[in-house]
Image 1 (cartoon, rainbow, N blue to C red):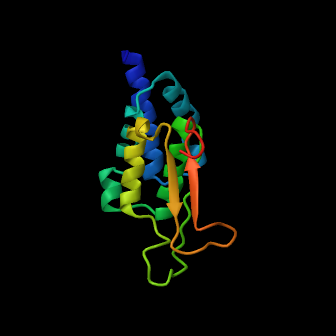
Image 2 (cartoon, rainbow, N blue to C red):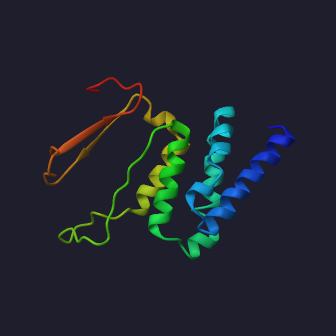
Length: 153
C-alpha cells in the first residue's frame, strides 16, 4: 500500500474509532469513504481493523456500549462489503419461556466477524434456520441462499 493510502486508511480508522467510542449517530460515520476503500481493495483487513478499533476496543471491552448500538453498528458494517443487509432482531422485554432465545450471543458476534474475514467459506452456500416452534406466517424452517448459490442446494 502506498504511503498516502496508508495515511488515508489510518484517518478512516481513527474516524470510526472516535465516533464509535463517543457513541455518535451511525449516520455520522464515514460509510461512503469506507465503501470506496473496500471497492479499491479486495482485502478484508480494513473491516478487521475497524472491528478492533470499535467493538473490540479495550475501552468497549471493559465498558461495553449498549447492545442495541453495537448491533446497529455491526448491521451497518456488515452491509458494506456485500451490498446486502442483515436483520438481527432481539427483545429483552419478552421472556421466551425460560429458553436462551431473544438475545444476541457473543458467539454470534464472533461468527459474524469470522464470516467477514472468510467470505469464501460462504460462496455458493445456503443456510437453513430451523425453529423449535411454529412462527405465525412462517413455516417451521426457512432457507436462504447467498448470491451464486443454486436454489435447492
